[in-house]
Length: 492
Image (cartoon, rainbow, N blue to C red; front, top):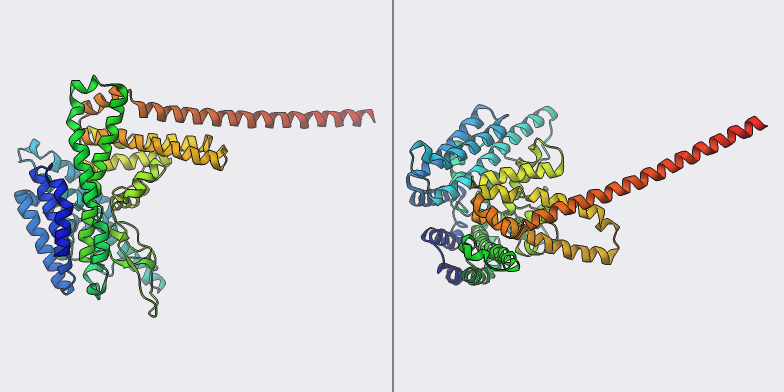
């Protein structure tokens, strides 16, 4: 009852300004928190079956016939894994991403457009299927290595057996985070099913801690969105305002965007916490999305401290106050960032960091959708990363402690403005609307980023020229000394 009351209080401020679809999302999210505590009681088979049944019920109720899209995706991935586990990671990525394209263009084939709920499920399912294919490949490779070396593999968090079709379907439609996330690996799901003493794991306290700021986020979202609606940006009246008002508007839009997702993701994490999903000892050094990174054996004589970092999807403080653009991505949608870092970034066709980051952002934009605003926003990130790298190398590295502190404050301010700027493309979606707004503020972030890159290169160029001149002077000096020695030898 306490949890249910808290969830209601948390959700009330946000409900008044939400569409019917968003209210359904909120209802599913709110209900998953108290329901999660019930899943600490059953045995593994019952827990698996009940979580599947609940997840399927939610999927069919909200997606109706469009639930077939997710089922086709799962069956296609199962066929790929059974046919060729060696090539499963690449094939599953190609299969799920191509199906995403078909899913978004179904109207071209005379099929009805999917519901927003089907889209949310399809996005998370894509991550799960690609991750599962990678886990199965790792399982077979580790098994072969064990046979050849006669020793157990030291890999952390590996599968103990290849999942069956039922296991895949149960994992795909597990009710926990089925629409809202966070993403979690199949091994995390298996560990959840096999928890030896779920009732002894922490639940109430971490759940309440995660929910405590949700009413604040909801109230701030409501207030800011009321006075600064996004639709106003698309009007001609908006352009009549002063430049600084237009510039300020993107700051408020990004603030509204953050508050909304802070509330939603904290609530989604609370749903995982109540069910005990992603609960590991602190000594396992778990990563969001990935789970434990070391084999941890607790001391039987000392109490074990647990955490839920595996399912942590947002770090509001570090999102707002970290200094660098590249670091800001680590604290936002953290489980998806882990997925991108492990399955997309290492397989980039490029070697340079900025280009690899650009490739990863392109894939992230495609995963989000086909709207041009996603690509305009995500592909601005590598430019900002290149700019901050250039300034760090050419300016910050030459400053003292106080100078570096001042530099970091300026860097933080520009980082936040860069995210404000990119957020506009993410929420406006259309290329025309995004370019229209960016034009109204004279593409200021693009200009600043390009200026920083140019300045950094000029500084490096000057440094190379100075080094070159010093080297030439040294060579000329050595030549003079050789000539003088030759003259002395001839004189003697």
